[in-house]
Image 1 (cartoon, rainbow, N blue to C red):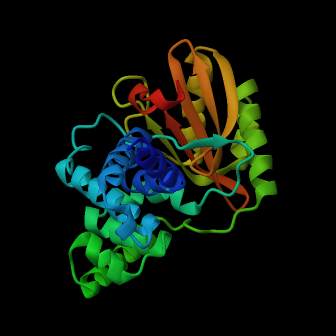
Image 2: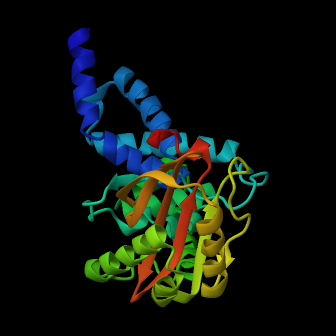
Length: 287
């Protein structure tokens, strides 16, 4: 029996990171994604694995169904949320550059506006290359219905996320991130204004538990005023680490009031969005 369990665990571990990626894109939460994948593992241990031709596809179906159950039981989870909702930051070492565009915060925010079935159909087909026949089995709908779900999702994403899959220059991104870091270190807002797009947006998520802007801040001038206030009032940061957050350059920072993340989205020659996550409930995996 121990050998069987060990074999099941070994086979599952080869798919764990892939499955966490599926669940995170569905749920926007690292903690929930890990919980769902663990639930999938418990099912995997007890299934007749010899009868499964494609373990990864099978496990993707299990994880997707578990995610759908969570989404359907929490459809109104953001209605009572205080301020702007952002997904939990998905953090990698700063040298990691291969993370896909489909982990971007902008896309996940757009996915949040889709129905659970639309989100699943889009992700399974467009991101994970699952054919519509297999998706029909996951969603328990016809292939035609699944095609329609994915098409609606695609149209919605194209309308809501104009920067999705726009080619990015690592050199330009590194230069603008360095300028952003200089702003944080020195408070030089004049230099910051030169790299910030006129129509940039700042999103700040405190969840009502830490100070943050309750609504997105639109436009260069308002963002500069916001940062000017931060420079004056925010307690000093005791530790700052450069990382990749949802595929973007950013920082994990620690100060007197806890951990937070800050990342930038670059399009062309400017910073077009800044994402700050301060809600401690979303940062437990970084503590």
